[in-house]
Image (tube, rainbow, N blue to C red):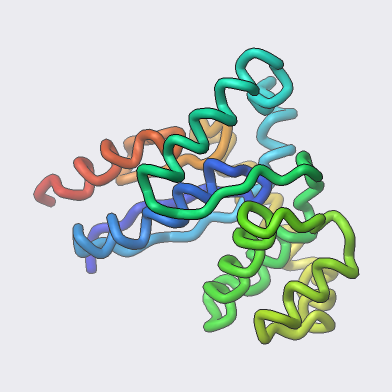
Length: 197
């Protein structure tokens, strides 16, 4: 597989969740590989001057309606989390820690679904531990991962790289050097992946 699509994401973004439900199919149909790029959206917002649309009342109301529209179109469950926004620092460190192992996909599924289907408060460490244990993951191992200095640094590096490449929000995709922002741009991602070479 020579084609790749980089997926910069943060679990705390409902649009990252929606993209996660669709990107594997898009990549598979194009014969492409997903390069998972966990980043810290809060850090991106702070450095870029951007903020969540939910923070703007009229835009936030519209976004909630639009999220529901896309969930219906994709045929996936979505329930906006009443605990939003959640500090995802530890969750994103967990993504970095599990990346490249067979535990990454079960971890990503457990966290995305806990946040955006089950509406769980993953800002609460006890809830996180219960979610991980239910998914067959070791909560103690998770705690070791998120405390590892190399993991912490990698998340910082990913976030800094995202900023240097022009990322201002999540999800953001790169096909080669071309950037696409938002799960509502997945059709452009598919088109880019379909191009020869």
